[in-house]
Each structure stands twice: as structure tokens, then as C-alpha cells.
Image 1: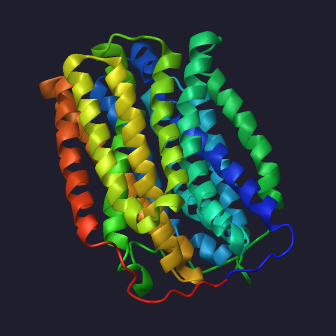
Image 2: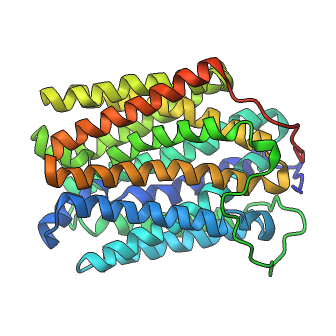
Length: 404
């Protein structure tokens, strides 16, 4: 059951979205810095993708084991714990002296993102009045991916133009997290009668019946879109440096940021196009972006990589917000946090599995050819899902309990 906060609700959901964005920005701060870590510590491209995948493992673990906790203890406590984990991740990177603390930092960052993804998304949706629900859906997804996109841009600019490139980005983010704790503490609680000491029941991937009609196609579309984002947050900086011979860290971070900026734009268009049409249109737009990424590797053109980031990000944003909206609206209020968390489990699997595959293939085929194999596989997946959704759009299996 969700509490109705009739008064002063609009500032609540905007504050929640801002806190969400700050927390998620920390998850991608290391993206343009991996090359510097390779020089300082000495490890292969496969290790880069494994370090990145540890983050996804942390996300999925948190979602599976605690993704429904905010439905029981409340949104606000879970958000505050997630911010604490994000701060702990920053400290690991500040004091790292080798791979162990890099792995620990990425794992803690994954735990933070896993908790935030379900709890903060639900909080943003529930703090909005009914006439702002569409805008709140955009605010939640924009805060998620927009925050993730700002991480590489912030780290890249600081690493390129400021001192202490491997530490200053995390000092700045640590300060932002400390500031974000203030509005997070002041957020109204939207869960009625939260239990302070609930019995812990890991949710796994159990879904309420109301969601099962929309979940499979929406989640697979999210998997394909997050695979593209995973490529840009894990190995795109290496593509830019080694294949395209561009060594400016700020530019490398900007390329990654462009994919998430385009995703945010795609999310803003979803309400105009409609969720049912946005899912297939987003998948097919994603296909075009993936083809451009592949072409950029073939001809070694930064402009094509940037175009692929923009068009692919646009398609990812359309499909992601449409899928998240469909799942969130279909889920009963008392299971909404858990259903949203299950959606993110599949999405983050799309970040981890293909990207580690690229890292492994790099050892045998080289970075360029591994990237080409990746684009072919994910293109086929996105094309199949897009064509399927054109003919069989997702339909809820039952009327959901809105709790509004």
C-alpha cells in the first residue's frame, strides 16, 4: 500500500529524481579512467571488462536479494543505504593501490545501484500526483540513465584538465553524495506502515501475475539496449584510444555521455509516441545505432561512433522507458518495487554478459574484431525483438492494483 502525500508532492518527486541521479553518477565515474588504471596497475582488456562486470554482478545481487526491501521497510531508508554504499565505493577508489580495491569499489557501486534502481524509481513515481505521473516516469528514467551518463563526462573532464585524475573525480562525487543525503532524509515516505524489522525474503525473479503479460518483451528490449550502453561504459574508451587513436579523456567521456544524453531524449519522446509503439520503434532504432557502431570500427571513424552512440542511445531510451512504464503500471502497488527490480535484473544482465564476452574475444580476435562480433550479435537480438513487438505488442494479463 502506498501513502498519498497530497501536499507538496511535486517537489518531492523532483528531489527524489535528483538524489537518484547523484547516486547513479558514481556508477560510471571510472569509465574514462580505465586506461590510466591499466597503465598504473597493468592488466588486459579482459580485466577491464571483468572489473566492469563485477559492478553488474553487484547490481543483480542487490536486486535479487533485496530488490523488494523498499516495499517493506520504505523507500527512504533503502535510498539512504544506497547512498552510503556509493560513498563507500568512492572511498575504495580514493585509496586503491591495485585490483582488489578496484573490484571492491565496483561491487559496492553495484550494490548501491541495485538498491537505488527499484527504491528510487518507485519513490519518484509515487511522490508524483496523478496528473504528473507521466512526467514522473520520465524523471525517474532520466535520473537513472542521465545520472549514469554524467559520470563519465565529469570524470573525463576532471582527469584531462585537473590534477590527481584518479582521485579528484571521486572526491567531487563523495561531496555530491553527502549533499544528496540531506534531501534524501527529508523525502516523504510513500510506503504505508513500513516495517523496521521485516522478515527477510529474497525475491528472486518472482513476478506478480499482473506483470507477466508485459514483462518478457519489455525486459528483453531492455537487455539489448543496456548491452549497447554497457559497450560504451566499459570498452568504448578503449575503442576510442586504440582503434580511433583519440587520447583525450574528456572527449572519451563525452562519447559515452552522448549515448546517455540521447537515451534521455528518447525517454522524453516515449509519452508522445506511446509506450506500445515506443518498444518496437526503440528496438529498431537501436539496430540502426548498432550498425553505425560496427561501421565506425570497420572504417575507424569517430564521427560514425558518435552517430551510433546518439542513434543507439535514442532507441535505447525509447524502449527502456516504455518497458519500465509498462511494468510499473501493471504491477500492484505493494509489489511495484519488486517488479521494477526484476526488470532491472534483466537489463543489467545485458550490461554484464555481452561486455565480458567482448573482453574475452579481445584476447583471441583483438579489440576491433571483438567489437564487430558484439554488434552483430546484439543487432540480431534487437531486430528480432523489435519485429516481434511490431506484431505482438505487450498486453497486461490482469488489471493492476494501482494503489493510487
